[in-house]
Structure formats: C-alpha cells, structure tokens
Image (cartoon, rainbow, N blue to C red; front, side, top):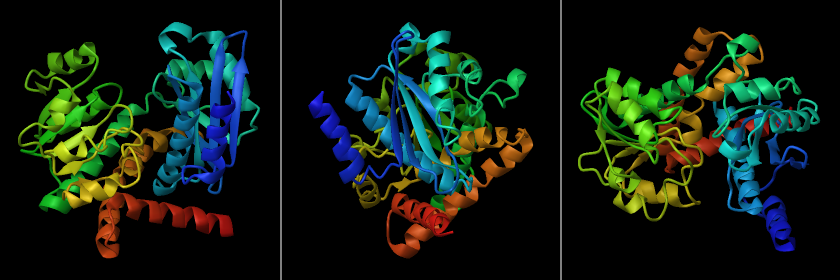
Length: 360
C-alpha cells in the first residue's frame, strides 16, 4: 500500500498531471462503496464532472483515472464557456455486481459533504436512474430524470456536439461542413456512439462501426442495415478509404500502436482522454492527421447537465452545443497561427481562461 500511496502523491504533487486542489478517498464498508472524488480546479466555479463506475484493476489505476478525468473536465468546462471548474469521481467495482441503492446513497453523502464544491452527474457505468438515487442525499447532483427535475440523458447532446466537431473538421480540411460521401468509423456505439451514427447517416455519411458488445452493434445494424461492421477497433482504424475515425469508448485510443496505422485523415470522437500520453498529438500532426480535441467536441453533455442547475431548457442547450462548431474552427485557426497541434492550441485557450479567472 505504501508504494501505491507514494505513486499517488508523486502524481498529485510532482507530475504534469497533478496540481489538483483536492482529492477525497471515500469508503463505506456497509454498502461496499470505494470511491475517489478528484477536484482539479474551482477557478471558474464549482467543479462539475460525472461519476464513473468501473472495475479497475487496482486502486492506483482508479485514482490515476480520477485525476486525469478531473483535469480534463477543467479544460472541457473552460472551453465550453461554462462557469464551472473540473472534477470527477470514480466508484471502484463492477456495477453489474455491486451497484445498489445503499451504495449510491452512501456515495451521495460523500459528495454532499463537499458542500457544493463538486457537482456530479453520469459517466461510464452510471445512468440517469442512479443520479436520481444519489440526489436523494445530495442536492449537488445533475443528470437526473425529468420526473425528478432533471434533464435526462445527456448523451443526446454529447453526440450532437461531436457531430458539430466533425462538421468543423470537414470544413477546415475539405472546405465543406458536410459528411456526405465521407466514410466515418465509430468505435463504440453505446450511450453516445449510437446517437452519433444517426447524425452521420442523416448527413449522408458512410458509416462503419465496432464495439466489444455484440448487442450494441446489433442495435445499430437492426435499425440501419446499411451500416458496415468492423471486427474490432484495430480492424476499424485500418479500414481502407476511412476519412474520419471517431473513438467513442474508453480513453487512450490514440497511442504508439494505433496512430502509425490510422488510415483516417481526421480523428473526432466522444471518448475522454484519447491521447494516451503527451507527444501523441505531435505524432498525429506529423502524419497530417487532423485531431479535434476530445474535451472540446464532447462537451455537449456537460453543457446539458450544467444547464440543469439553472432550470433545463433543451433548445437553449442545443444552441450552446451547436457553438462547438465555431469553437473547433477557432482552435484549428489558433493551431495554424501558432504552429502547434490543435490539442496544444485548445489547452492554451482553456488555460488562459482559467488564469484570467484566478486573477479576478
């Protein structure tokens, strides 16, 4: 355990991935809850980010994920123009085995103990119904059902925002903001990915999908027999004639193994933390692959859950999410002007907004 603790502290206090304001380790033995809540920044306002429920291989892996995700939320919220900082929580364990009302209520009490510094919502492994339970113990909960005063499923606007990012990428690279006639590969057709497929097909794109869950693929192909299926992600990224690759599952999709074999000219997807490590963004640029920063294009969901705190209005949220198109184009323009990859340009813009807020 000492090695694990030392590793966590090194990350927090000494690495580029650190700099977090607060990290809370939560345990409720009666319910089996083991969770980590990480607050990266509250410079722009209360930290906002989802709750991931996942069977991590180790506690250290869970903490590292919480730290990375929280940091990403600071940048995402800043680029989305929200008055929120970045935070994230992870619950350790298989949600299919240990998730219970008792556990979620215990988790809600831990979030409530932060007094509003952290606002939670859904993420991988948690759903609207779960947030309804958490909200019984914590008023700083969003992503709830309409029946309980919430906005419902945020994946709808997440997919819409990614689609806007793709349109901006097409405009920048090919001079036309349409996906008509373009071949788009979607890796992961779960909560967000299957909505994205709908947008792509409506815009006239040719779509190829893959997912580790056969039932997720079947749901798409039953509705849209014209959609092609790749055996796995490795096969998808090597697909001949692929124009756009959309990673929509877990993070780290862009790494030393995948980037050299990408056939796509654009990467634009819903997954968080797509760059496996620093330097991957340069590898993409060196191969003339245009990367639309993940935390910019997948911000539709957080725009929705943030709006819920002020009385949800879908049309207002959709209008805000549509601005992801302009934000993405601005990032590409900044990257070109500064001679840096788009990911670095987005970071600079977000960091400037957070720095300006701290000086006020």
